[in-house]
Length: 152
Image (cartoon, rainbow, N blue to C red; front, side, top):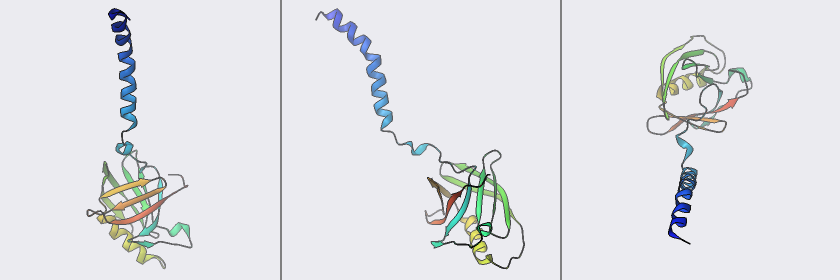
């Protein structure tokens, strides 16, 4: 094959080979940098400080919803309602200006108090499918939630 023909074929193949190389390189990239779905999901507490959280009444299960529109947080400890805002930077999360009502209820106050106390300590989050995990600054799992089919 003459030199000119070989050069011409190689010059036409270079862009195609470059595109293929980029595709192969990107296929090996870890997609964990993409944000998981923390926001606009109703999260119901299933585990608190290593203990399973069960309730006969689904309305008394502590829950959280992180609303994306205004970075607003809402939820319930099972009896009392909470609201506030949040800031997310990668896997770091900060809850700010949290307000909690002060009703007294017959059941669930012990779990609710532990839930509200743990909220003060969360620093990072991780979502895997339908499960949200919240951790303290040492990486200790404080709370685990499951997504709920309720509208947010």
